[in-house]
Amino acid sequence: MTLLLIHAGGTIGMGKTDKGYAPVAGALQDGLAELQRTDVDVVEMSPLIDSANATPQDWNRIAEIIEQGFDRYDGFIVTHGTDTLAFTASALCFAFSGLTKPVIVTGSMIPLTQPNSDGLRNLGDALTAASTAPAGVWVQFAGKLLHGARVRKSHSSALDAFEAADEPTPPAINAPALTRTPFAAADLAILSMAPAVSEKVIDYVLRTCDGVVLRVFGSGTVPETDTLRRALAAAKDRGALVIAVSQCPEGRIAFGTYAAGAMLVEAEVVDGRDMTVEAAYAKLAHVIGWSEDTPTRRKRLATVLCGEASR
Image (cartoon, rainbow, N blue to C red; front, side, top):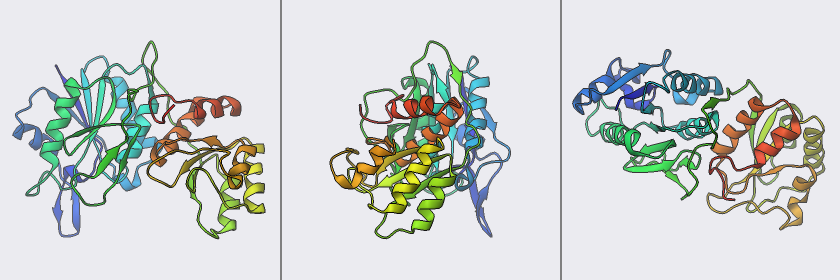
């Protein structure tokens, strides 16, 4: 069994310099040698991605490498920075339909080159998972195999930095053959509700962006302001996509429970159920690349594709 490791960047492949951690050539190869793994080919992306700077075009780069090597390799590992690792894992879930092999995303909180690094364990576990996990996109971190469309970074510094809801649906879109949908260039935003949040920001975002993740209160309430109502109506009229997710880390949206959320239904905001912010954002980028037709986009955005939300 031959595996392909795609080194996208991140802490796992860095070393200490006078200016802080920076990429070190050959760090992943040294880790593979220490693990005595000779069955792994390595592709190092150029330039490497600082995960804070990752974009949908970087998701395309990673997905394209997987697509090009799909017939030659039995499994894939993507090493990535932890700050936006959950966004990339979610994006890879949506990038492919008909994925029949495991894609394992991993990284580390301490570089491989430093003492007490968690990188070697995570890399070794990811290599094992790439040979044994079910088909789909998974995150392997701190001894846990996590659903790629459900994962979120839950701690800024602990070695056990990620968590994901239990989900029986595999993290892959079912289809008879492998196809890849590129992420299109789009203006996307995440807009969080807060008491007396700036109405100028709300108005501008909803009137200009192609897609918006609306982080609402609790089970689906928002401030009942005329500005928000008009801005949501304007987004609907021009075919922009808005999906609502709860600011609560547990539970789901329940449109219609409170009158303070009624305007979301009126504006045809998509119910994000219990989706993570990361998955909702990546799914917005996906549906915009999937179709140019607004009703088709909105229908796909509302459809559970790969276990990203509870049915």
